Image 1 (tube, rainbow, N blue to C red):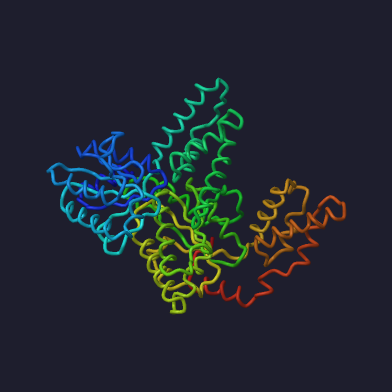
Image 2: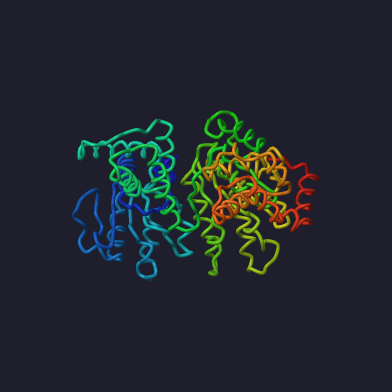
Length: 492
């Protein structure tokens, strides 16, 4: 359901109080006004500066800028038999006042069981514990894909009127990617992103996808818990054929409304540096959905209750952004202390919240979780139902090492045909993909320092100087590989 459908259902269900978390109260106000008209509800709005108003009237009731005065008027208004919706902006900030809090409770008690609903609008609306159980909470102010496409067309048409010079070269598949990337932004943020694209060169083309992705990454980085990432094409990762096939088989079910349920996600276990994080980016690219990383370093807080609130906000944002790929890197770190009480039970509560959400969610979000330490994972996370499948990323075999060498040579503008790729792959047995990449980078520095053109010899020298993790921590790596083998975990 979109926002209007969801808020309509809550009003029809006779919730006395609804909280709408939004950064765009004007857009939400327009949607609430439409809902009021559809349900024949009298529409009231209130703000500290504007007072209590009816409909779109610019005139307010006398001296209703004061919250207590407004609530007295509102209590009088609902004595009439007509149904109404009261939209109050930033009102939660005044509930610390005893008089305002008492009058607000009286208002809620009066509207209980009636077709009148009170809606509080603001960013991160918070309620006292004696009022919170009466409320339903939703997010608003974020256009769906249909509305985003309509806004893109409107912005382009408006730009054409102001400037005769506009070069359009956006094929349908790229336009769909733009729409998906803009999802989760407010209407004003969408306008800002589009204006950045159009004003820089009076064009709208494939190059603007990177501009929009950068804009969104900066927007989400400032919010904190979720971090936006660009996806990768399947050619950017060598091997992983079983994983690629698994995702490809389920891609249609992810978007269709057919009998097959959409895939929920997968867990990637494996040796460090073997491409698990890159695989998460490839999964998002294969499914054609945006990728967001749950930033664990920002999730935990020293303040009581704030960690759980951070997780709740992050999961609510994921639902808002759906369809989306949620990348949980090193998932064991979320539950590092879940078996004990050293953190006051915070990790236990986080684990419970995360497991319940993973099991019960109905949105089309796909979880791509990675882990290097199976000992840190609680058993309840590994059971069927949390993830559709568990894959193991082992040290790359010889054919995959050849592919990795080629990929990292090409990324640096080098022609793999000029190198002994097979010989280099044979020389790096036991190396992870990250270690092979670092050897190529070190070879570039070595050749540059010697003022020579890079060759296979430079790469081979760096491989000989490197002691891979499979040697340095042989026991830990062997334990992990044997654990996966004994449990018949699917290889990537």
